[in-house]
Amino acid sequence: MNEIVLGIDQHVERAAAQARTVIDLFDVDDTRAYLLHDFVDNPEGASVTQVDAVKRAQERLEDAGVVVELREGSGDPAESILETASEFDADAICVAGRNRSPAGKVLFGSVTQSVVLNTDRPVLICSEAETA
Image (cartoon, rainbow, N blue to C red):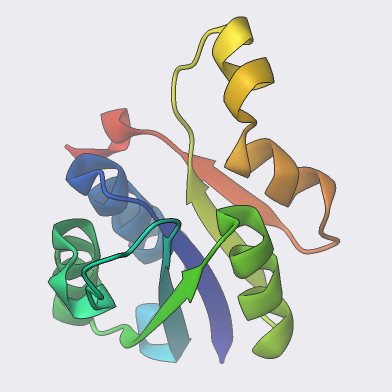
């Protein structure tokens, strides 16, 4: 079975693109997707089941026949993604890239860059343009 960790942020279109990428690249009947949303700041105590982007990805994946498990983390999103991938011995990690200025990357860091540089697992990077 293919074990894939999807690091899902708040952006619904990026989550839909991630789901489409997994559906297109893996045998959906032999794939388990772990949808991880990291709450960097969660004073209201929200649950991963309340995140619209997670719900969209879950719906698309399950409609295609992929087994889905929801996970949540807190703190540094890149660390949560890497820890989850390690926990489940994932075959791949799927993240969504964003257009960011060079200054934005320096000031705020890049989850995608951190994941790519700190894992030996394949990392799929997809964009919103893939949702069509």
